[in-house]
Structure formats: C-alpha cells, structure tokens
Image (cartoon, rainbow, N blue to C red; front, top):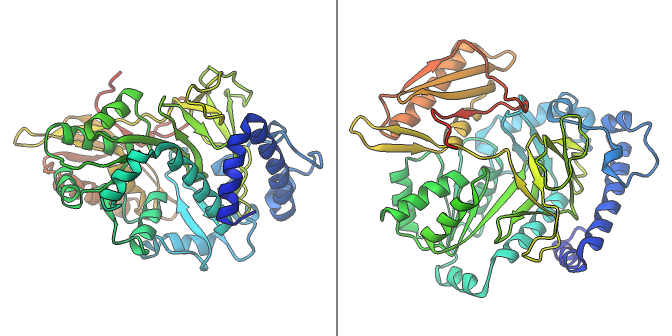
Length: 456
C-alpha cells in the first residue's frame, strides 16, 4: 500500500485502533523490512546471517551506527543503480539542491555531530509515507479556526532554511518554492541578519511560519518588541529543542498554534508534538528504543543514554536498530491529549543561542544553525566545532576530510564565518583557528556550537 490515499487511510485506522493496532503494524513491518534488508543488502546479509528466519522484536537485531553504515555504503544500499561515488558527485553540486537523483531519489545530508557526515536516500514510496505522517501531524494541530485563519491569510507559507547544501529543510524548501505552490511559499535564509529577516517577513506576512526552533524564539522576541508585525495561524518549530515555556512564549507572541517536530534525516517522520508538549512517535512506521550505554533497555520515565531507531519505511537504505545518539525519556502512562501513539521528550537536543554586542553597543543574537549550516556546506570539512571563547572571539576547531588542504580549508571557513558576522554588524568579532581538534561530549557527540555561557 504505497499510494498516498491508502497510506493516509491506514494511518487513520492505526490511530483509531489504539495501541494494539499500532503494535501489530509495527511488528509486521519490522519482520518485512528485516527480510527485505538481508535479501537485498550485502551488508545486512552478512550481519543477520545467524538471526532467526523471522524477526518481530527489534532487540534481536545488532546495533548499527552512522560510521559503520557510511563505511560500507555500497554494500548497505539496496539500489543497484546507486553508488556512493555517484551520490557524492550529486551532493557536492549545490545547484542540484531540491532535484531528484536519477529522477526518483531524494538525497539529504546530515551534520557530523557524531563524527561522521551522513548521506540518506529516499524513494517515492518512502516519501509518500513521510507525506502521510506529515498529514497526520498537521491534522493534529489544525482546528477550524486555524484553517480559516490560514485561508484568509492567503495560505502564504514562509520557510526559514539554510542555503547552499543538501540539508533536509533546504531540499524541501527548494521543491516547495519551485513547484506550483511557489507563489504562496517563500524561503528565507537562516543566515540572514534578524533585521533583514524581520523586514522580509513583514512584507510577506505568512499564515504559516516554519523556522528552526531557536530562530522561532528570536522572532517571537522581535514580535514582543514590536518590530515583527505578522499574524501566523500556525508556527512549526524544527531541528532544535526548546523548553515547553519557550513554546508557550512563542505561541503567545504570535497568537498562533505552535507545533514542534523531533526527527532526523534517518527517520524524517519520527514524531510530532501535542498541546501538552509531549512528542508522539509514529510507531506504526518507526521503532524507538531508549537504552543505556550498553544498549540495554531503560524503563519509561527515566532518561536514556541514547536511543535506537528503526525506520520501517525505507527499503532503499534500511536503517535498522540505528544509534541516533540523542537522550530521550519515554512517557510511562497514556498522554492526556488522548493520542494513543507513544510519547517522548528529548533530553539531548536543547540548542543555545550565541549572543554578541555590536561596536555601537546593540545586542545581536545568532542561531546555532546559522553558523553550523554555513560550515557544513563547505567541501572538505569532516568535523568542526565553534566555541565562543570571549564576547568578541570565536575559536574554530577544524578536522579536514582526507585529501583536503588544511590551510585552504581554514581560509574558506574563516572567510565565510567572518562574512556572516559582518552581515550582522559584528565585523569586530575575531575568528581564531584552534590547534586542538573538535572535542567530544561524554555522550560521544561533537557539539558543533558552544556559547560563551551555559544558561541553566
């Protein structure tokens, strides 16, 4: 059942059927994807050779991670017309952002927060499931009043996304703005200075606003200060975590419904928020396992060391019991919103804003992803870390990819960061090259942006 209409109907039946219907679909789809993976992927055929003929419990599967899968990409993937070399040529070309590879594959890239950059592929079947889960998400947020407000607002939608790379939001934005919805959809760059972003939004006046979470928080402050004059019906936050109080503040600032998503390139339809600030997992198409450092189950109600996910939809690039690297907490009881899908809160995705002062004494705030996506799109960067060492100094820890010239790479990184700072009236901020490589957190991730202070 891969037609969008059939998937929408199945998603509705799964939710109405409650936990038993959801669990049944999850079990059957897990057995099917495992069978498909070891039949069509050389990597999984080797990895699963000693497993039972049928697998209905993800805990039976060995754990995999991005580094392992990327190292064996051509053996991992289940599409004979795709090779890593071909895909790298595609993603190295920024003019192809939003296009389909070979006319049928969507390609997105991830940051190297675990030490390895990822490349992920979806076919039309997987994209249809993603669309069905998006419809489920928006259906949970939209009310008659919200829909009426969107229609009277001309259905205008503003996306605030990075540019210059094959990031998931950039790819989606390119397709929306280029398609038949382009007249009502406008893409704004996350790298633009806030005053410029505010001016553009004031002119466009979107009915739906889709920013990164920290950008949404900054725009809410602009609205509260009387500089941003938009009246969106729906604000959809993504990419970073915010405290529930911040989501409430954004809702109050705009007089809008605020939704939040927690997802990843590996599982783009992972979860969506309810009005009680819990994130409901689309468990009919994904399994989520909170585990400790030894990959043993963590009881509901306790924060995990990491989380293992299994994408039950992607047959081109099976992602099975994959270490996503985030800490989550699984709700131990049913959510009061009435949604039967399991509910989680994410412990390890809270983002910090960088704050500066212009030479004229004016405060300037920059979202972490504005800097991170700027560096990520530069070819030859394997890993990086930007730390605000003083109020006017950024130190950059840089790990070049194999074959990249370190000095040339540094000059490109330095110039791009300096130009971004200058566009925010921060030309006096120094960008220094650190001697040490990027440093891991205790959880094994590389935090890309480290502010001067850590608010708690």
